[in-house]
Length: 359
Image 1 (cartoon, helix red, strand yellow):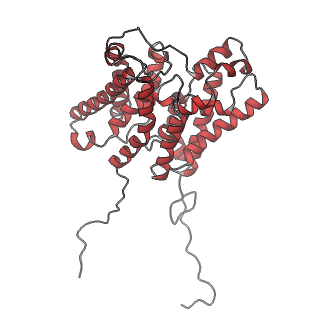
Image 2: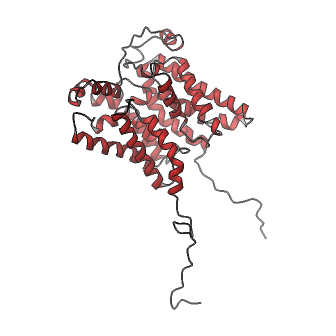
């Protein structure tokens, strides 16, 4: 007689390391393009942010007396630092990236218990706290001129690590910042639209902004890779983008001089980064399909409201964090039906045998 020697186990290809590496691979084309567009200062800031995130991860694991090798090599800290770097102005000084990594890894991740225990998205916590605490450094945008036309290697070092203000590139507002300032000054959307970068530039990424706000096309292709590899499902991206398009279309139709059209919301700011890479975070988003719809619709609504009526031109970080806080409530009221039980949790009665069935 065969005796079982171990409990049953399920196996899957979707390990933490494989998932993190796939997300990093999906982010790589947009990141490389952004680094090329903004040159050496962006490269140094990106490396500083990613490396410091990994160092903080190792330090926290050491302090918590947790095994270092499996957690430090699973790619989660690298991805968090990568996402923080994607939200920073490319010419921000090095210490902004280090502080962002500290907030993401130490405060937003390990103070909650480490990987899988955090209530809020670490990168968005870092982004929101930096925007509030360092408004000047976090709103200094540079027009992309390309690696070859931008600051040299040594000049890039002085900009990132010594705070040099002698930029060869031209300081410029991001698309959403420009719209917000012009609307506040009393301009109409009809007067603002001709002053913005054209649609092709916004799609390809030839506009001022962070690395995560440049190439809409490459970020969307990265998101498509995550969908094809089944790292994410389409529910949250569809809910976020659909809600943002619907609300902006309705408001733009009713008051075209006051509200930006849907295409501007889709091709500006961190919309694509949010829909495919931020809002779909496994830990901080609901697990049920219905819950994901509620969560995504909430993010899309808040992004539109904050961008249109709030004090900040970009609302992705605050929208994601607010919906992160609602996720436990969504999970409480939207639960999958347990097999053998009704929606209310009551046991289902056994089916009666059909008449004439053989006993």
